[in-house]
Length: 400
Image: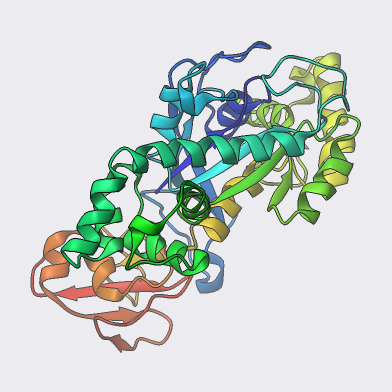
Protein backbone atom coordinates (compact mmCIF):
# COMPACT_ATOMS: atom_id res chain seq x y z
CA UNK A 1 0.00 0.00 0.00
CA UNK A 2 1.25 3.42 -1.02
CA UNK A 3 0.26 6.79 0.48
CA UNK A 4 0.84 9.94 -1.54
CA UNK A 5 1.88 13.26 0.02
CA UNK A 6 0.12 15.89 -2.09
CA UNK A 7 -0.74 19.58 -2.17
CA UNK A 8 0.07 22.85 -3.87
CA UNK A 9 3.65 24.22 -3.84
CA UNK A 10 5.21 25.81 -0.78
CA UNK A 11 2.95 24.37 1.92
CA UNK A 12 5.51 22.07 3.56
CA UNK A 13 5.01 18.83 1.62
CA UNK A 14 8.70 18.10 1.31
CA UNK A 15 9.28 19.06 4.95
CA UNK A 16 6.50 16.67 5.98
CA UNK A 17 7.98 13.92 3.81
CA UNK A 18 11.50 14.53 5.10
CA UNK A 19 10.26 14.51 8.70
CA UNK A 20 8.30 11.31 8.15
CA UNK A 21 11.14 9.47 6.43
CA UNK A 22 14.32 11.38 7.40
CA UNK A 23 15.08 11.36 3.70
CA UNK A 24 17.28 14.13 2.31
CA UNK A 25 15.04 16.09 -0.06
CA UNK A 26 15.33 19.63 -1.34
CA UNK A 27 13.26 22.04 0.73
CA UNK A 28 12.90 25.66 -0.34
CA UNK A 29 10.48 28.57 -0.19
CA UNK A 30 9.41 28.59 -3.85
CA UNK A 31 7.11 26.57 -6.12
CA UNK A 32 8.18 23.33 -7.80
CA UNK A 33 11.05 22.52 -5.45
CA UNK A 34 9.96 18.90 -5.86
CA UNK A 35 10.50 18.21 -9.55
CA UNK A 36 10.73 14.43 -9.38
CA UNK A 37 8.72 12.46 -6.84
CA UNK A 38 10.58 11.25 -3.79
CA UNK A 39 9.81 7.79 -2.41
CA UNK A 40 10.66 6.90 1.14
CA UNK A 41 9.84 4.80 4.15
CA UNK A 42 7.69 6.16 6.94
CA UNK A 43 6.41 4.20 9.92
CA UNK A 44 3.08 3.06 11.23
CA UNK A 45 3.15 3.40 15.02
CA UNK A 46 1.28 0.76 17.08
CA UNK A 47 1.53 -0.66 20.61
CA UNK A 48 3.62 -3.81 20.39
CA UNK A 49 2.16 -7.02 21.80
CA UNK A 50 5.49 -7.78 23.49
CA UNK A 51 4.23 -5.99 26.61
CA UNK A 52 1.04 -8.06 26.72
CA UNK A 53 3.01 -11.32 26.43
CA UNK A 54 5.76 -10.02 28.73
CA UNK A 55 8.57 -10.97 26.34
CA UNK A 56 11.67 -9.30 24.93
CA UNK A 57 11.09 -9.21 21.19
CA UNK A 58 13.60 -9.33 18.34
CA UNK A 59 12.01 -7.40 15.44
CA UNK A 60 13.28 -8.16 11.95
CA UNK A 61 11.03 -6.24 9.56
CA UNK A 62 10.25 -3.36 11.95
CA UNK A 63 11.41 -1.62 15.13
CA UNK A 64 10.26 -1.90 18.73
CA UNK A 65 11.18 0.94 21.07
CA UNK A 66 9.87 0.85 24.64
CA UNK A 67 6.89 -1.27 23.63
CA UNK A 68 6.07 0.81 20.56
CA UNK A 69 6.28 -1.02 17.23
CA UNK A 70 7.28 1.10 14.22
CA UNK A 71 6.34 -0.72 11.01
CA UNK A 72 7.72 0.48 7.65
CA UNK A 73 5.21 1.88 5.14
CA UNK A 74 5.83 3.47 1.75
CA UNK A 75 5.25 7.19 1.12
CA UNK A 76 5.64 9.24 -2.05
CA UNK A 77 6.15 13.01 -2.15
CA UNK A 78 4.57 14.37 -5.33
CA UNK A 79 5.27 17.61 -7.18
CA UNK A 80 3.20 20.63 -6.16
CA UNK A 81 -0.17 20.93 -7.88
CA UNK A 82 -1.43 24.18 -9.41
CA UNK A 83 -4.83 25.05 -10.96
CA UNK A 84 -5.52 23.40 -14.32
CA UNK A 85 -2.91 20.70 -13.71
CA UNK A 86 -5.34 18.26 -15.32
CA UNK A 87 -4.88 20.24 -18.54
CA UNK A 88 -1.11 19.80 -18.23
CA UNK A 89 -0.29 23.16 -16.61
CA UNK A 90 2.82 23.33 -14.42
CA UNK A 91 3.96 19.83 -13.52
CA UNK A 92 0.39 18.60 -13.67
CA UNK A 93 0.87 15.53 -15.83
CA UNK A 94 3.80 14.34 -13.74
CA UNK A 95 1.96 14.97 -10.47
CA UNK A 96 -1.15 13.14 -11.57
CA UNK A 97 0.85 10.25 -12.96
CA UNK A 98 2.24 9.69 -9.46
CA UNK A 99 -1.15 10.12 -7.77
CA UNK A 100 -2.58 7.24 -9.82
CA UNK A 101 -0.29 4.82 -7.97
CA UNK A 102 -1.40 5.93 -4.50
CA UNK A 103 -4.01 4.07 -2.46
CA UNK A 104 -4.67 7.06 -0.19
CA UNK A 105 -3.59 10.70 0.00
CA UNK A 106 -2.33 12.97 2.75
CA UNK A 107 -3.12 16.50 1.55
CA UNK A 108 -0.72 19.01 3.11
CA UNK A 109 -2.28 22.47 3.32
CA UNK A 110 -1.06 25.79 4.67
CA UNK A 111 -3.60 26.03 7.48
CA UNK A 112 -2.63 29.64 8.16
CA UNK A 113 -3.62 30.75 4.67
CA UNK A 114 -0.15 32.24 4.12
CA UNK A 115 0.22 31.09 0.49
CA UNK A 116 -2.04 31.80 -2.49
CA UNK A 117 -3.60 29.15 -4.72
CA UNK A 118 -0.33 28.73 -6.64
CA UNK A 119 1.88 28.62 -3.54
CA UNK A 120 3.17 32.19 -3.53
CA UNK A 121 3.78 33.61 -0.03
CA UNK A 122 1.20 35.88 1.59
CA UNK A 123 0.56 37.23 5.06
CA UNK A 124 -1.25 34.70 7.28
CA UNK A 125 -5.01 34.88 6.86
CA UNK A 126 -4.98 36.28 3.33
CA UNK A 127 -5.97 33.00 1.66
CA UNK A 128 -8.70 30.49 2.47
CA UNK A 129 -7.18 26.97 2.75
CA UNK A 130 -10.62 25.43 2.17
CA UNK A 131 -10.21 26.57 -1.45
CA UNK A 132 -7.03 24.50 -1.68
CA UNK A 133 -8.87 21.35 -0.64
CA UNK A 134 -11.66 21.90 -3.16
CA UNK A 135 -9.24 22.74 -5.96
CA UNK A 136 -7.15 19.61 -5.43
CA UNK A 137 -10.25 17.42 -5.41
CA UNK A 138 -11.39 19.04 -8.66
CA UNK A 139 -8.00 18.59 -10.34
CA UNK A 140 -7.85 14.88 -9.59
CA UNK A 141 -11.51 14.35 -10.54
CA UNK A 142 -11.17 16.16 -13.89
CA UNK A 143 -7.98 14.26 -14.68
CA UNK A 144 -9.83 10.99 -14.08
CA UNK A 145 -12.75 12.24 -16.18
CA UNK A 146 -10.45 12.88 -19.13
CA UNK A 147 -9.05 9.36 -18.89
CA UNK A 148 -12.52 7.83 -18.94
CA UNK A 149 -13.94 10.07 -21.69
CA UNK A 150 -11.22 9.14 -24.16
CA UNK A 151 -13.01 5.88 -24.76
CA UNK A 152 -16.42 6.45 -23.19
CA UNK A 153 -18.73 6.23 -26.28
CA UNK A 154 -17.30 2.87 -27.34
CA UNK A 155 -17.30 1.55 -23.79
CA UNK A 156 -20.91 2.59 -23.21
CA UNK A 157 -22.09 1.07 -26.49
CA UNK A 158 -20.25 -2.17 -25.76
CA UNK A 159 -21.98 -2.49 -22.38
CA UNK A 160 -25.39 -2.11 -24.02
CA UNK A 161 -24.94 -3.98 -27.30
CA UNK A 162 -23.11 -6.96 -25.86
CA UNK A 163 -24.81 -6.95 -22.49
CA UNK A 164 -21.42 -6.53 -20.81
CA UNK A 165 -20.97 -5.74 -17.15
CA UNK A 166 -20.27 -2.00 -16.65
CA UNK A 167 -18.13 -2.43 -13.49
CA UNK A 168 -15.90 -4.92 -15.32
CA UNK A 169 -15.53 -2.63 -18.32
CA UNK A 170 -14.71 0.34 -16.06
CA UNK A 171 -12.21 -1.71 -14.06
CA UNK A 172 -10.40 -2.60 -17.27
CA UNK A 173 -10.48 0.98 -18.56
CA UNK A 174 -9.24 2.44 -15.26
CA UNK A 175 -6.76 -0.33 -14.41
CA UNK A 176 -3.84 2.10 -14.52
CA UNK A 177 -5.33 4.13 -11.68
CA UNK A 178 -5.13 1.31 -9.09
CA UNK A 179 -8.94 1.29 -8.85
CA UNK A 180 -10.67 -1.92 -7.80
CA UNK A 181 -13.97 -3.34 -9.00
CA UNK A 182 -15.45 -3.09 -5.50
CA UNK A 183 -14.71 0.66 -5.48
CA UNK A 184 -16.41 1.11 -8.85
CA UNK A 185 -19.49 -0.75 -7.63
CA UNK A 186 -19.62 1.45 -4.52
CA UNK A 187 -19.37 4.64 -6.59
CA UNK A 188 -22.17 3.42 -8.89
CA UNK A 189 -24.30 2.63 -5.85
CA UNK A 190 -23.77 6.07 -4.35
CA UNK A 191 -24.56 7.96 -7.56
CA UNK A 192 -27.56 5.82 -8.56
CA UNK A 193 -26.72 6.14 -12.26
CA UNK A 194 -28.22 3.74 -14.81
CA UNK A 195 -25.65 0.94 -15.16
CA UNK A 196 -27.62 -0.76 -17.95
CA UNK A 197 -27.73 2.29 -20.21
CA UNK A 198 -24.49 4.24 -19.83
CA UNK A 199 -25.03 5.91 -23.23
CA UNK A 200 -27.67 7.99 -21.44
CA UNK A 201 -25.10 9.48 -19.07
CA UNK A 202 -24.50 13.20 -19.57
CA UNK A 203 -21.14 14.91 -19.15
CA UNK A 204 -22.31 16.04 -15.72
CA UNK A 205 -23.19 12.44 -14.84
CA UNK A 206 -19.68 11.30 -15.78
CA UNK A 207 -18.12 14.07 -13.67
CA UNK A 208 -20.38 13.22 -10.73
CA UNK A 209 -19.51 9.52 -10.98
CA UNK A 210 -15.77 10.14 -11.24
CA UNK A 211 -15.85 12.60 -8.34
CA UNK A 212 -17.44 9.95 -6.13
CA UNK A 213 -15.04 7.30 -7.46
CA UNK A 214 -12.11 9.59 -6.63
CA UNK A 215 -13.28 9.91 -3.03
CA UNK A 216 -13.74 6.13 -2.77
CA UNK A 217 -10.55 5.01 -4.53
CA UNK A 218 -8.19 7.81 -3.40
CA UNK A 219 -9.42 8.63 0.13
CA UNK A 220 -7.81 11.72 1.56
CA UNK A 221 -7.09 13.31 4.91
CA UNK A 222 -5.90 16.85 5.56
CA UNK A 223 -2.62 17.57 7.33
CA UNK A 224 -3.18 21.18 8.39
CA UNK A 225 0.43 22.35 8.41
CA UNK A 226 1.88 25.52 9.97
CA UNK A 227 -0.52 25.08 12.88
CA UNK A 228 1.63 27.41 15.01
CA UNK A 229 0.81 30.44 12.82
CA UNK A 230 -2.16 32.83 13.23
CA UNK A 231 -5.56 31.75 11.79
CA UNK A 232 -4.46 28.11 11.53
CA UNK A 233 -6.50 26.69 14.40
CA UNK A 234 -9.76 28.30 13.31
CA UNK A 235 -9.24 26.98 9.78
CA UNK A 236 -8.77 23.46 11.18
CA UNK A 237 -12.19 23.71 12.83
CA UNK A 238 -13.76 24.97 9.60
CA UNK A 239 -12.37 21.99 7.70
CA UNK A 240 -13.62 19.57 10.33
CA UNK A 241 -17.06 21.19 10.22
CA UNK A 242 -17.08 20.48 6.47
CA UNK A 243 -16.51 16.80 7.20
CA UNK A 244 -12.82 16.48 6.37
CA UNK A 245 -10.55 14.28 8.48
CA UNK A 246 -8.10 16.97 9.57
CA UNK A 247 -4.92 16.73 11.65
CA UNK A 248 -3.22 19.85 13.08
CA UNK A 249 0.39 19.60 12.00
CA UNK A 250 3.80 21.25 12.30
CA UNK A 251 6.16 19.42 9.96
CA UNK A 252 9.11 21.71 10.76
CA UNK A 253 8.86 20.81 14.46
CA UNK A 254 8.74 17.08 13.69
CA UNK A 255 11.76 17.34 11.42
CA UNK A 256 13.72 19.20 14.11
CA UNK A 257 12.82 16.61 16.75
CA UNK A 258 13.69 13.61 14.58
CA UNK A 259 17.04 15.09 13.57
CA UNK A 260 17.86 15.90 17.20
CA UNK A 261 16.91 12.34 18.15
CA UNK A 262 19.00 10.90 15.33
CA UNK A 263 22.02 12.81 16.67
CA UNK A 264 21.40 11.48 20.19
CA UNK A 265 20.60 14.91 21.61
CA UNK A 266 17.09 13.98 22.75
CA UNK A 267 14.97 10.88 23.37
CA UNK A 268 11.98 11.06 21.06
CA UNK A 269 9.87 8.51 19.21
CA UNK A 270 7.76 9.53 16.21
CA UNK A 271 4.36 10.53 17.55
CA UNK A 272 5.44 11.22 21.15
CA UNK A 273 3.89 14.17 22.93
CA UNK A 274 7.15 15.09 24.64
CA UNK A 275 10.92 14.56 24.51
CA UNK A 276 13.80 14.27 26.95
CA UNK A 277 17.08 16.09 26.47
CA UNK A 278 19.92 13.57 26.72
CA UNK A 279 22.99 15.69 26.05
CA UNK A 280 22.38 19.27 27.32
CA UNK A 281 26.09 20.05 27.12
CA UNK A 282 26.03 19.45 23.34
CA UNK A 283 23.01 21.65 22.64
CA UNK A 284 23.58 25.31 21.83
CA UNK A 285 21.51 28.07 23.39
CA UNK A 286 19.69 28.62 20.08
CA UNK A 287 18.90 24.90 19.79
CA UNK A 288 17.67 24.75 23.38
CA UNK A 289 15.38 27.72 22.82
CA UNK A 290 14.01 26.14 19.63
CA UNK A 291 13.30 22.86 21.42
CA UNK A 292 11.50 24.67 24.22
CA UNK A 293 9.35 26.56 21.70
CA UNK A 294 8.39 23.25 20.11
CA UNK A 295 7.54 21.81 23.53
CA UNK A 296 5.42 24.78 24.61
CA UNK A 297 3.76 25.84 21.35
CA UNK A 298 3.27 22.48 19.64
CA UNK A 299 3.60 19.42 21.88
CA UNK A 300 1.82 20.74 24.97
CA UNK A 301 -0.90 22.45 22.95
CA UNK A 302 -1.65 19.74 20.37
CA UNK A 303 -0.25 16.59 21.97
CA UNK A 304 2.23 16.06 19.14
CA UNK A 305 3.42 17.52 15.85
CA UNK A 306 0.70 15.72 13.86
CA UNK A 307 3.04 14.06 11.34
CA UNK A 308 2.87 10.57 12.85
CA UNK A 309 -0.85 10.92 13.59
CA UNK A 310 -1.51 11.75 9.93
CA UNK A 311 0.39 8.67 8.76
CA UNK A 312 -1.41 6.42 11.24
CA UNK A 313 -4.82 7.78 10.25
CA UNK A 314 -4.02 7.38 6.55
CA UNK A 315 -3.43 3.66 7.05
CA UNK A 316 -5.88 2.86 9.84
CA UNK A 317 -8.81 5.11 8.91
CA UNK A 318 -8.49 5.57 5.14
CA UNK A 319 -7.00 2.22 4.13
CA UNK A 320 -8.61 0.26 6.98
CA UNK A 321 -5.60 -1.88 7.81
CA UNK A 322 -4.74 -4.05 10.79
CA UNK A 323 -1.40 -5.30 12.14
CA UNK A 324 -0.75 -9.00 12.71
CA UNK A 325 2.38 -10.74 13.99
CA UNK A 326 3.58 -13.93 12.34
CA UNK A 327 5.60 -16.59 14.16
CA UNK A 328 6.43 -20.27 13.71
CA UNK A 329 6.41 -21.42 17.33
CA UNK A 330 3.31 -20.14 19.17
CA UNK A 331 4.68 -21.31 22.52
CA UNK A 332 7.88 -19.30 22.24
CA UNK A 333 6.39 -16.69 19.87
CA UNK A 334 9.44 -17.13 17.68
CA UNK A 335 10.59 -17.94 14.16
CA UNK A 336 12.89 -20.86 13.32
CA UNK A 337 15.91 -18.77 14.32
CA UNK A 338 14.46 -18.24 17.78
CA UNK A 339 13.71 -14.54 17.20
CA UNK A 340 10.70 -13.46 19.25
CA UNK A 341 7.85 -11.64 17.47
CA UNK A 342 10.09 -11.00 14.47
CA UNK A 343 7.55 -9.77 11.93
CA UNK A 344 4.69 -7.29 12.19
CA UNK A 345 2.65 -7.23 9.01
CA UNK A 346 0.23 -4.56 7.77
CA UNK A 347 -2.74 -6.17 6.00
CA UNK A 348 -6.21 -4.99 4.96
CA UNK A 349 -9.00 -5.56 7.44
CA UNK A 350 -10.89 -8.68 6.38
CA UNK A 351 -7.74 -10.62 5.42
CA UNK A 352 -8.13 -14.36 6.05
CA UNK A 353 -5.60 -16.83 7.44
CA UNK A 354 -4.94 -18.34 4.01
CA UNK A 355 -4.56 -14.92 2.41
CA UNK A 356 -2.00 -14.09 5.08
CA UNK A 357 -0.15 -17.29 4.23
CA UNK A 358 0.01 -16.23 0.57
CA UNK A 359 1.34 -12.80 1.59
CA UNK A 360 4.19 -14.50 3.47
CA UNK A 361 5.02 -16.89 0.64
CA UNK A 362 3.04 -18.44 -2.22
CA UNK A 363 4.01 -21.96 -1.15
CA UNK A 364 2.64 -21.39 2.35
CA UNK A 365 -0.67 -20.37 0.83
CA UNK A 366 -0.79 -23.30 -1.58
CA UNK A 367 -0.01 -25.83 1.14
CA UNK A 368 -2.11 -24.21 3.87
CA UNK A 369 -3.45 -26.73 6.41
CA UNK A 370 -4.45 -24.52 9.33
CA UNK A 371 -3.30 -21.56 11.41
CA UNK A 372 -2.80 -21.28 15.16
CA UNK A 373 -3.58 -18.16 17.19
CA UNK A 374 -1.05 -17.65 20.01
CA UNK A 375 -3.37 -16.39 22.73
CA UNK A 376 -5.95 -19.16 22.62
CA UNK A 377 -3.78 -21.81 20.91
CA UNK A 378 -6.83 -22.58 18.76
CA UNK A 379 -6.53 -24.08 15.32
CA UNK A 380 -8.03 -21.79 12.71
CA UNK A 381 -9.34 -22.64 9.26
CA UNK A 382 -8.44 -20.90 6.03
CA UNK A 383 -11.47 -18.58 6.26
CA UNK A 384 -10.62 -17.23 9.71
CA UNK A 385 -10.70 -13.43 9.50
CA UNK A 386 -7.67 -11.90 11.19
CA UNK A 387 -8.04 -9.36 13.99
CA UNK A 388 -5.78 -6.43 14.81
CA UNK A 389 -2.94 -7.62 17.05
CA UNK A 390 -3.35 -11.33 16.24
CA UNK A 391 -0.21 -13.45 16.65
CA UNK A 392 -0.47 -16.20 14.04
CA UNK A 393 1.45 -19.30 13.06
CA UNK A 394 0.76 -20.90 9.67
CA UNK A 395 0.94 -24.69 9.39
CA UNK A 396 1.50 -25.70 5.79
CA UNK A 397 2.31 -28.82 3.81
CA UNK A 398 4.92 -26.77 2.00
CA UNK A 399 7.68 -25.01 3.91
CA UNK A 400 9.28 -21.75 2.83
